[in-house]
Length: 214
Image (tube, rainbow, N blue to C red; front, side, top):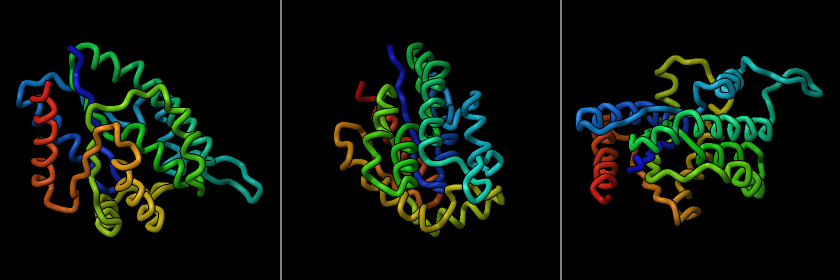
């Protein structure tokens, strides 16, 4: 029996990594075969992406060194996703293992389209990700950009290229639009501003409902 594919999405600081881990721990306690992963992946392309996100990978521009452009990032994410699916996600699902991913295709559709400066570029980003199967359930952790910024600062991590406050506000809006934009996909918005365990219980209820529906 094919396993379920569950994805957490949201802006940087929404809590996708924390909630992915908590869900994984809960399903392990429920004796559910489960595999936890993330994007960018730990594969070779994913390593390059992480370097670009942290500002360690730059390219030459007319005015000097800069971060890779949005088209380059979109293609890198699509390539990493293909490798991630082939090497990790699909084999586990085929074995009946539930896969939890911290980010997936919607991150590309939202981040790369928004950073392109033109929503008209969305069809191209969709096209290069057309082979990526949709999850059984996508949980969008909806948080304010102010709360997300507070959490990122609390982590004391190196600032990444997408951490601009104004950009994060626009990204949060795009995430809220996902259910209406893709009505054929199961996308659930959860208020991620609350206490960690409260958010976890809401996410766990959705996943248990998904498993009970089979």
